[in-house]
Length: 435
Image (cartoon, rainbow, N blue to C red):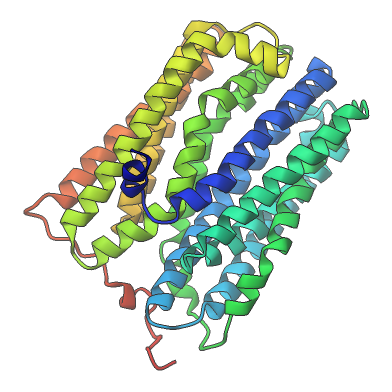
């Protein structure tokens, strides 16, 4: 039975999933220890910082990881080293990070006052955490493109293991300053990237520099999609802070609830590192049968996981967030039902988005997320309680994105519609097999 289940997932999923499982556990330990150690106000600040870090960090740097992985995989299939792709990708990540840091520094006082109760140190930690994710995602792109999934999983595992160890030490020593709990988000990803650098350095190689146009061709749209996707899944915590600044309980409780309900998203992340290369290979060779089979398996897996997680969350969610995270009892079973529905639809959207990306349909993916965010905004304006407003925004936004992607994807991959995705060897124009 186990062997059959493993055969349904793309190669590399188990290796990445093992590291991701530890990283996911680290998130729960991190927030659980912080929830029991910090005051409601301080946990509120940590929740907002956590949300901003992963909204911006994943939104900005995951696309770079994906494009590096795509181009490295294309070069690897031709026997070419990844060095030229890494050089361009690292430079792009550094430039993007510098631009974001400049904006954060420019609005440092405003951010500190509005989001962190005047604590400027939290803004400094925010910058460090974003830098850590920039380094991590850049190196993961190379590991994924070279299909070094055990190393990819190892980097995730080191990140998670260090978070658990450091946070446990903070809790055992009675540390009550939120800055230290936030600083873990800086230390752990950087250490993981450094300790898994050897295979990247060994594989770098030389060659003709990759043209900027090759990397940037779809990156703008991909980054827009990634940022909009993170807005859909994360903006609720920030919206609570902005809609009702005096409510210091709901933002922290909502983050704790989201961490529980979104457990299936960790599983999707383990699929994502290997799903995109698999779909891209099938699409580039015109093998729509393999493409659809892989897509259906991925949708089936995340649907089963999403439904299982939904049942557990709705039944036990209110008790779990209070027991594990010491969260205020402001969310009930209905709140968890909305969050569970939203997460299931979000999972579908993430899988369908990978399919659009594999077909080189960056514009269609970005359009779907933009429509979903517009739906989220409209839903958030509903004249109901603050918590329900953000829950409806997450749910309706996710459903609209998934439905839009399904329509766009069906039109492009119907039997009568040929695909025009360039073959893998054409992904890097100007680079020949003899380079």
